[in-house]
Length: 125
Image 1 (spheres, rainbow, N blue to C red):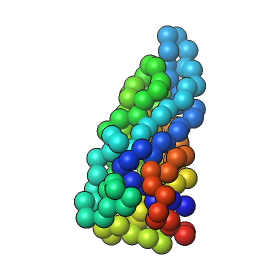
Image 2 (spheres, one colour; image 1 turned 180 degrees about the vertical axis):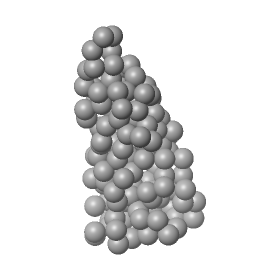
Image 3 (cartoon, rainbow, N blue to C red; image 1 turned 30 degrees about the vertical axis):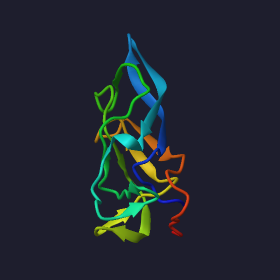
Image 4 (spheres, rainbow, N blue to C red; image 1 turned 135 degrees about the vertical axis):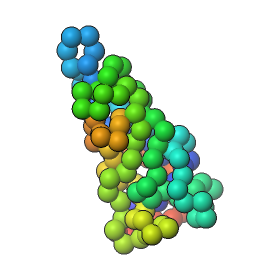
């Protein structure tokens, strides 16, 4: 799978159950990697900084209302699973189809990385 960097990776989470009015409603949660706070500054892949499991996105949006589990409307995103064979700065790297916790550090929904940010470097694990 392609390595994630901070140039345009789309992370999609569903269902992001948010309280809208009196009822909890499932919604789609989107996150773009351009809002990520990088943790690896010395590895540049495809023109962008590489991501590992410590990389946290500043916000993930697309929903209306407060999340039931996290209590946040537009919370951060962090990667939960990545490549267990490649380490970037002593932490496992993040790749396409990595599992993410979105809308809060106590995640309100689980998502997946859907679009690649670069097409040159691949993790084979």
